[in-house]
Length: 129
Length: 138
Image (cartoon, rainbow over all chains, first blue to last red; front, top):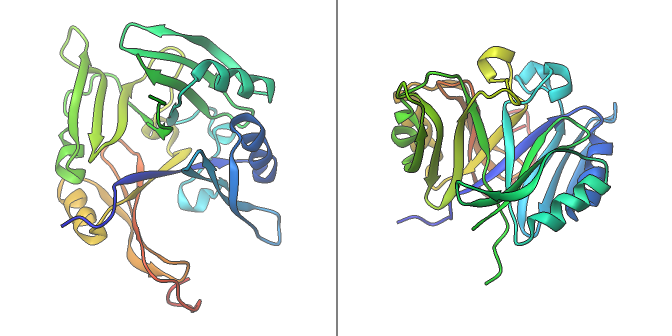
């Protein structure tokens, strides 16, 4: 019998991890569950957006984890399903994200818009229609 | 009803991919919908693993990077599962590369990492009791 619920815990690799944590707090009202810094200032932090957790970590190329800034692009976009994508996207843009395309009803059944955060990660903010 | 907040990661794959059976074999994923191209290749595959939704999306003009093109990844997908060793074994049997064998870590996780056939990194994990930090469990 299964004893735990299957769930994702994405880790976003960034440069300037401490600044990224501050951005995600402002953009998504993320709560910081823990934030550990090494002597050089590199951080690993676990954040929660309304109970959905993710990790933010300074990049670690020796482990294959690179920031989008280092690679010149990202390999995974963060789909974030929320009750009010318009408000969430607007708040993220006010906090410093760039709009890739605005929130709108998409023919594949989502109200969805895309932003790029200041650390290079793309977010698709959406809810099912 | 209020929409529950959730992550639904979008993993970029190369153009021309027709076979994403890996995710079914490795993780027991179910394909919910597929948007295909005229040549039969995948534009978007919508999948879920036991209710956790994710998408595979081919390269587009505004999102051109894949792990294979960049020789690295910018997001690692942590996946909580019941049976860490079983899922890792299934993933490797289905074509993944084992990048970090499963091990108990002092901070209260049993974790191992695999790289899937499209280059994405998955950290397969479950929570366990925390222990004292030693050389073996660091």
